[in-house]
Length: 281
Image 1 (cartoon, rainbow, N blue to C red):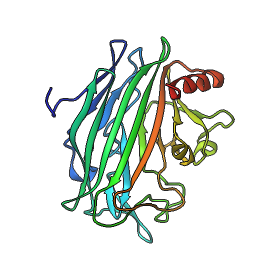
Image 2 (image 1 turned 135 degrees about the vertical axis):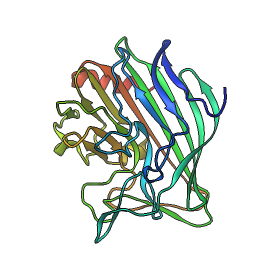
Image 3 (image 1 turned 120 degrees about the vertical axis):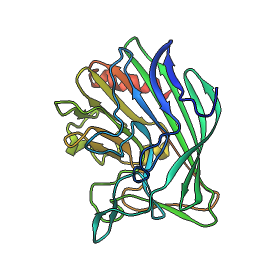
């Protein structure tokens, strides 16, 4: 094993995801490690990386559009009073090392660097677990520690003046298909109803596949869901929705999202049961 290897996640011996540790996209895409492709147990791809509609969307990972003014999301930066603006402010997430690496997961250390300075140090824990013959779960935890000399704040286009655009944090870019995927929770249906909610779980269902997302800690459950279906299929958990998130020197922000990856279309009861089983492990 070398630090340049790309781990492959397996469930019961089946490959279900590949982790890219050292991507080399253009700087304006904010290079960062990510999972792609991720598949169902039957082999259906449920992620996309660098799609034509948003070249800075990279599979499954962590991305924040505003860390004290530095862009770790990619693409343009939303500037209050100016809108989306091309700025030379892109940061990079650098893979440092694996503390643990097994066929079903890994623990990784990353460094978030911008303008030649390390701002955040991340510990990322990823695990793949089988649930049934047609479903498995991706357990994704990240801890961001402020290693800079002063306080930092994390923001989003929403906190910078763009309503409804509170993206930033865990983000899953799903595969775009000819038909718009269905979005639903235990008691809501449709992108407009689900986006911005704090539902216990939300499902994104395409042609022959379903993803069910759940916050697995109290802090994560307080974060609203960022949901897109019509423009493109993507789901994230918002770190900064109504206001910027402060991180004092030495302080750590921790979030954990568990995603059920299923073949077919589980009904609401089945989706809830799968999420419950995945989160309790």
